[in-house]
Image (tube, rainbow, N blue to C red; front, side, top):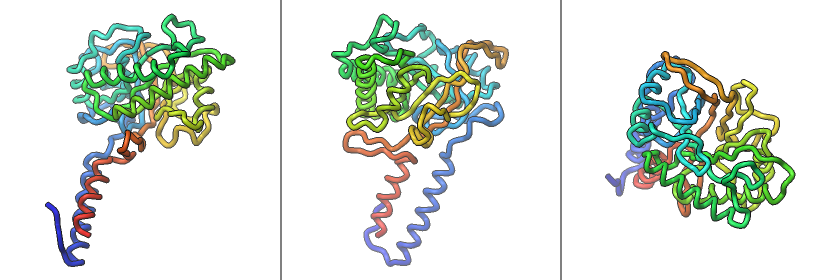
Length: 307
């Protein structure tokens, strides 16, 4: 209801009521830390992974629904899902829209991964064509978004481009990767999704993206997912400037390929530590803010009506 004319005392009262209402909504929607006791979490339907600090795991093929229920006894509350890409390694018999919905209802967060074309100087057979790198990056983003939507993943979810290790010292190769990655990020933004990059600290991929971080015309990933299998649960690394991908724009794969058993179910996993929150990102003519954009829109509309 629009308020067209009010005395100053009523305007102040309206603002106080609005402030209380918005504060109540913020408290009701605040993220629950992921590092608590291994109890069943409340359902979640927002963007993935959203605002999340805690442990996650990824495994080549999405586990069964029963396995995911058993693993609620684990300290993990986020799971990496490989949603597509020409170099994706495993079939995904379980990864359906219904599976995603059921895991969300249990409180699981996802970090979607896309294994597309790899660096021209890598050993992969399906590689980026340096002459078509930007076009291929946009095409990969289009495909990734189509798959994310088919799975029911909410807009503003972060889709992580899995760029496996490639050697340093090949300038043409590095340029092609950066062109592909930048086009990937820009195209995801066009679709209303956020961009992530997975790379190993020993790969030229990390150094290349650190070097291009502030480069004019380069669309850097919104989230950096880096692998350093030192077993330390942190998002700090000496090879990444402390101000880059901060605050809360990093996750670390701190332990690779190993088995864990929770709830009687054994899975081969990589372990990750996430410290992430959606950031302000411009999609065309619209800016989506870091902290609950619907609250800011509500505040601005009602505040204007009581001036």
